Image 1 (cartoon, one colour):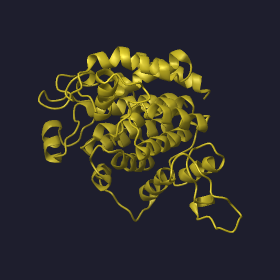
Image 2: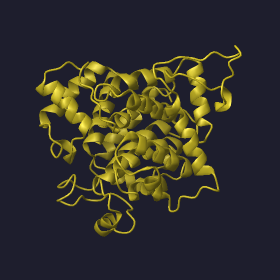
Image 3: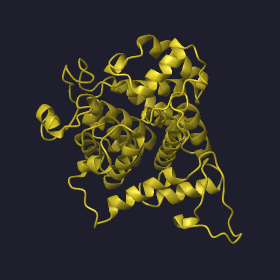
Image 4: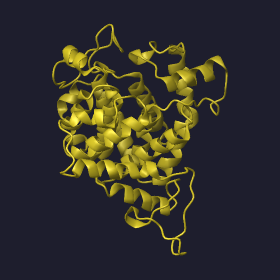
Length: 353
């Protein structure tokens, strides 16, 4: 089972699924424009976000993920100087600092802020990170989670370094790192269950993830009797690592019912911020751990920031079902799918999985 390629293709498919039906916060309007149940790629209405693009194309977020994917596969590892050179030479010349402009039909806040600092203010790449609380960094860093899936410390180190290029809020960086640590475990063979957080905390205690730990095994509290020291890390709280535990519990608890599952978007929140997006993605990736199609379609049909929700969910479930578990129609309908598949499979080889 090719879990590594499944994660990459799952993310790209999720991104493209959201292109045509992105940012509908009025669900009646979403149903009016795209039907009662979206089943695949859609063409955006001309007057809406990404207007003029075609079904199966990637948003700018997906294009930046591919840019990082190309950099890592060509270099054999994450080289920040190579990735930032590509941003300088291949992306930023196509932007003008406004939202409704640039490749993919829309430029997100974090990229606009990095563009202004880098291009207009001539700042170094050490000074380009901004305060946006959105998910662009966690999404492109999926490449790094896959590349270093067997090396959790390297996942954390590279994700943090890549994230702060555009987003330097500590909570955003911590949650981005935690998500990609989860994804790395799934790529390496784990499943989305409540136990995933305990495995993450074990990595903290082994000094492989840069979080504080204030819990013992099975997430129970440490007793201050000298038996187990509190460990300090880069991030002030382990809560980003504990979130998957509770989302997985909710998905598996027969007494907690979210029906239909797309309403997880309403339960956990429809907006763009990372703290709305990750809970829904973790929930759907647990509930539909073996069913890629149901996972991404429920992510899409929930509306709001459904592109990010589907991209994150697609990566998590793609890692669990492998490339072989993704319906062929999603791959066939994705623009330049043969090239993207080749890149994903090359990254899989480099990951050692």
